[in-house]
Amino acid sequence: MNRSTIFLRGAGGFSDSSRPYSYTTYPANQISRISIPNSAPSAVYEDQTQQSQALLYRLSGDYNPLHSDPMVAQVAGFTRPILHGLCTLGFAARAVIKSFCNGDPAAVRNIFGRFLLHVYPGETLVTEMWVDGQRVQYQTKAKERDRAVLSGYVLLKHIPSSL
Image 1: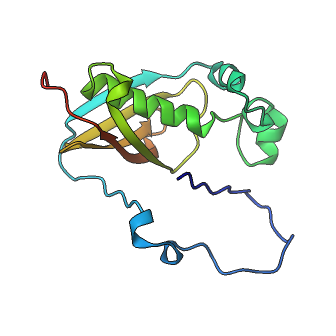
Image 2: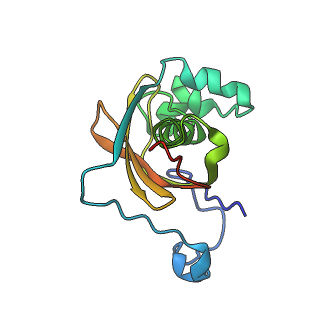
């Protein structure tokens, strides 16, 4: 199942008013709640995005000008183009795979992420991870702003015995 929500900052007025979005309308088994532990992380992985990262990621087929055109980004309320959310999620997943799967992406069963804040190309992403059985909870921060940009978990098929 794939569920997504699109936020259009400052947009609206094109339909009748509706109730605010709420998880209460979803069945309990379809809701993933993330609570970042207060303990020290099991692992921390730091990775630098490139200034050209959003332009390179456009090759995946997402040509939204929010990620490439400074004027569009400014109209949307950003100081400059932002990185694609799925690119940010890829950085977090790679951190888990390198830290807990010996670099083997086939060890991943499921990935869940909640986007919290935008990432600017060129920022350093620091992913803190906590192991709980076969579930690795993570929180990714933009180091330069010390702000959480993504949180979630990766469910692994198994934890390699070498860990």
